[in-house]
Image (cartoon, rainbow, N blue to C red; front, side, top):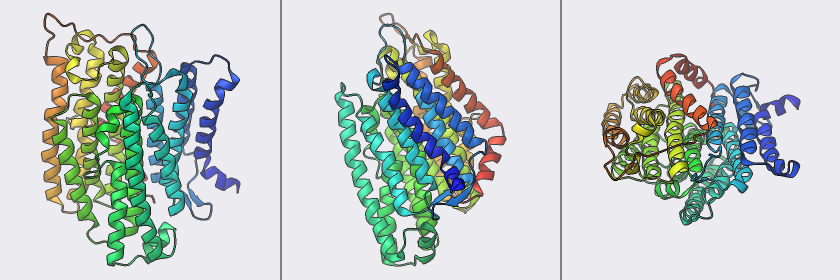
Length: 481
């Protein structure tokens, strides 16, 4: 029994940390948001080290419903890394004129909700049974709904929360309906038994369509993306950053567990379905981004396009394809956090979210402008940054199956994305402020925030040129998920 509880040690510690940050105000009178962010950040940093150190054992426990493997722990490390970086970005700014992006008096509640969401993601990737998997999914979704509507003084945040809860409920309904059909056909809720008992029939095809639709909402894949732009724009920026990285990684893990693995031997055309989904998602995300000026909507379109690129790698169910996806998720997390870190710094100092207001950023804040430019270059896939290697790896996974048309579509989309990513750089570097406008001033960036920007900037470079990270993805991808 003790060994089984070691399997869920990460989940138990996440729950303890969530309860602990909520209890701080009861124990310490007059506690400020900085201490709360520090406690959660320190805790998540420790859990990240714990996950990567091998201290959490591999194994199958609790009646074969909970699995730890190298691949599972790799996904958990990505979830914890996302929570760690976003938590540090919640560190309050000092000085007059700074606009807090989360209500300071509810800071502990926001951090606890994020921890519960990370806990749900860890349950999703470890679950080997449909009921536990769905419980984990709801633990992810419900805190994110609350966080999206957290800024009660902004009507856009309330609107975003309402839209997110409606679309989340719809996607959960579609997913549950598909899962109920699977249970009816297989007579079991265990994923390994389901994959053995499923046979090719019109019902299995129909159930896979419902499940793929439900998961498509979570991943923001076209045509299930309709909530993304409004929710990303209305939510507080740290919440948007968390939504764009951690929840997407969880949705992709969900796609592996309840579509690719159970239906892999039954639905002979599932690879074509995922390839079509990837094509639509890439194309829409890139074309929609061409017309965006609001940075949160811009990064929402970028997030949709990036989901399309990741789906290209998921077409290949072999360890090579899985390694490409794990590696690119790491690349995407650090690149997107770098972009959102710059946006948060600017929004905190000025309240501006329009890229046209970034004129003169390279003059007044050259270091911040450099981080922002490198993030755009990495997301665009410009060498030698990590985004280039990540995209190459994803396209190689599809080419290995002979799906050269999908590689061509991905390459064309990557070329289109160069335009709008460079368009943001143009406003920061090439457009000079006129005589009646002063360069954008971003002062009082706290040390913690600058530390995050430094870490992700170094990461965008090192992950792209140091082969150790690719080898790590290849090693962990060989285990069960």
